[in-house]
Structure formats: C-alpha cells, structure tokens
Image (cartoon, rainbow, N blue to C red; front, side, top):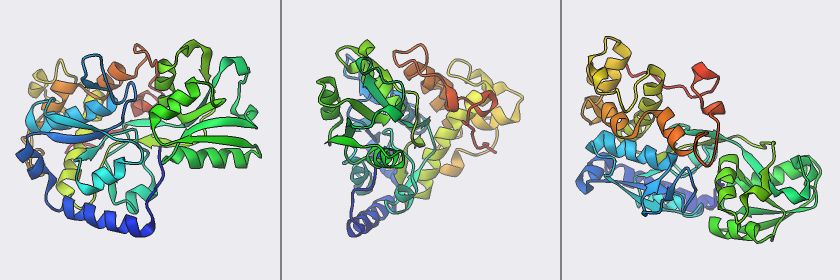
Length: 339
C-alpha cells in the first residue's frame, strides 16, 4: 500500500541522496556493521510484529532473517526499524536502513521516481474492505454513503477514491497517519468500514475487541504486489537481495527445506546442487560464500515454510496460498533459475 508523498523536487533530492548512499557498497557496510538493518512495519501480525517476548516475527521479518543468514550464517544478525507508511521511503533513501521489507506495494512510480529497486513479490495481495456484521453488508457495492477508515500516505487512499468514483458512490474518508490510530478509530466505531490490503485486514481483525463481529467483504479492488526493496545504485546489493528471495522460492519448487537442505548437498539434481552451493560459483559471483542459499534455507526455511509459519491456514490469520502458491500448484510464485 502507499503513494508518493514527496514533491517532484523533494523526490529528486531524495533520489540523489539514495544513489550516493548506495554507491558506498551496501554489502561492505553491512559486513562491517555485523548485521542487516531492516525496515519493517510498526506492527502487522503475520508480516512484521513483535511477539510476547519482544522478538520480531512475520513473513517480512523472515525475509530479512534469510538475507542475514545468507551473509552471516546467522538469522539473528539483523536489526529491525519499525517505520510508518510515511517514514519508510525516506529511511531507505537516506541509508537509515539497508532493505525495506514492510508490506509495500511495487508500483511504477516507486520503482522510478523514488529510486527503489523491488526485490520481488513476497506476497500477492489486493485491497479489500472490512465491516461490522451488524451492518448486514455482503458486497462493497453496498457501501455508498459509508464512512471509511483509511491510512494516509498509502496507495489505499487513491484506490478507495477510484473505486467509489467508478461505481458512482459517495463516501466519507476518515484519515489517520498511523496504523494504530486507524485501528483504534475503527474499533471504536468512528467509521463504518476499514480498507487496506486484504492480508492486513485479516491481521487487524484479530486485534479488534470482538473479532467475530466483523467480516471481510469478498471484493478485491486493486492489485497489491507486496515485496522488499533496496536503493538503486548498488547492483551487487540488489543482486543479493533479489536472489535470496528467488532461492527461497526455488527451494520450495525443488523440494528443499530447512530439514533436508544439508543432505541435499549430495543430490544428483544439478538444479539443487547449484542452489545449495555444491556446483558453480554463484555465491562468489555476488560477494558471498557459495553456500549462501543453503544457509538461508537452513535457518529460515523455504518460501512455503515461511508462508505457512506466519500467515498460513494453521495460523490465526488462516490465509490460503491462493496466488502465492507455486506456479505448479495454480499460483504465480515462480523462481528465476540459479544457473
């Protein structure tokens, strides 16, 4: 979710700053620091959130842990910076963080005007609506005249306007900057409807005083390809961030997981051998050890393990794989080959 909030001039300055920071070679800086600095949300269950012990968990968090494991052989060699929707891009552009992994939609303007390189799509999503069941609403097309809670600094605002205008419906936006403020407003009944990414709604619903009193409507009104991003200007760091993601998906495609990855070094399958570092110099080519992917998979798991652990049907969010299934299972998750 999110839109550009910088003016053209400010965006150009930020882009220039980001390029300068990136040209300093991020991998070298990360190795000197001894950790990856990862930007995450301020709290979204299943994606990036702290548990009862204060430890960060979630699908977005696990991507950062996999990145750290590939570099340091240690999934704990990562520090997390919670960022609001408004803060996130400036934090990446300025060099405050090394990677942004925060339920962020890949759009053309972010890929160009903001000087970001998106690593891949770790979660295919779409914007939806949540309403109290007592309203007896079954479709978003019945929401004309409703007051709608929405977070500022997000693509959600624009999608909301487009949808209501396209369907000749009126609505009253109730806008807040912070996610916690939006949650509190909807929970207190200050608006009739809550709109954000469907995965976010599933998470937010669990935080309400009475989750069972609310339902998510069936319509998805946008495409929201969510994924991590890095600054433009450092191709080596972009390659590392990108191929860690592809390695996690490739591992699931090949049947490699956290439990069997080490024994897979003896596999006769050349695709597996290249992935786990038994063949070729693919790690060395990007500045890492050749078993970079083995380390990531061993410590964090393949994409399927990460999905099921954080947001899958057996978790409180109960999200089915859907589009996020492998392409061989009817989804669109598809890894570029390591070769």
